[in-house]
Length: 416
Image 1 (cartoon, rainbow, N blue to C red):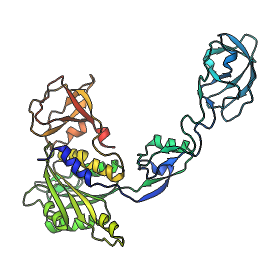
Image 2: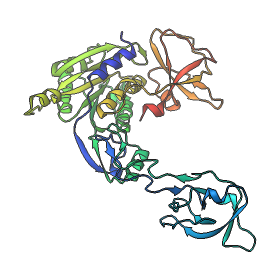
Image 3: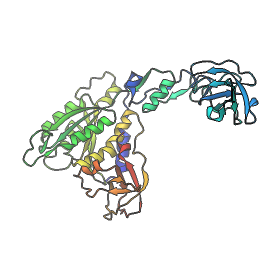
Image 4: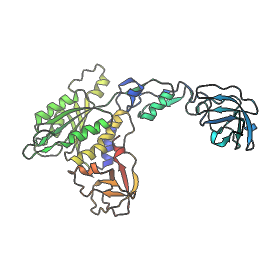
């Protein structure tokens, strides 16, 4: 069996970022990947300005505490002051440009008004040069890179772009992912259950996972357990998508048609991976049903749609998506791939049944700052993932005793 890292490395070695781009207005670019680095159009800030409400002064006039200065001007944000003369101060408000001649700002809490002298201020500290002054260009410099290609555009990146004077950003197009689900025993919620049947939880779980990564998701529904139906759905799904994901049908039973269907429509590797929950994972590619590219190189790279087949058990499907499909999609998007950072945390549980596989245990952070274990770690118990905050990455052959430090990966990092 492959290790989880071997399987992930193999997947990522094949994924190539999508090449098509589009230019969007700022708010429409949220959650997208920047295709081209952008430079600032302005210095940020454009002028030296104050970060506090207070008084702009000359340190030469305030070298000892208690100096009294005449208030010669008032500078709100959006206004320009005049030359600050010796022995004077400027009343100034956060964001306002520091007037010429001033080299420090004293916040108003460190000043007082002498009795009966409303046009004067007493400076009760000795400020240092540059105090509470934000220098021109200290954040961004005109003509210099504000955001680098490949940046994932969160709210803070959009704020940086806006401060740089930009209105539009060129981003990678969304990755298009198709999903379908196999199993004659499956019904959709709202339908009557078949004899011996179950509701399809994987559909909603996986489609939500795909959408949470900012992809366009197409649901091809539940496909009958037949080779022809599976092949037909693969042909349809391959047409306009970058990736096809399935759940179920990747074992070796007589009713598991994914392997022969993908092999007939493209190519397939079927692996046993040394993880729990999980184990069977299929990876390959399906020929696009319409490959009419005139450019031979372009046709070669776009003539296939990637395929990943996940196991059918709900927790196995969910965990293998997080461990393998998510990094693959991130790389297609042009983002940093791989698993997110794990954190050392204290296990407040015993897990003494060390397995030869790499186990991913569903856990929750408790009030004492440790991790509690869900009581039932079966691959069919999806409530363990709903109850939990994340996973413990437990290496092969390693038991856990209460008090041990373990590797914790939060779901919040695995679903973004």
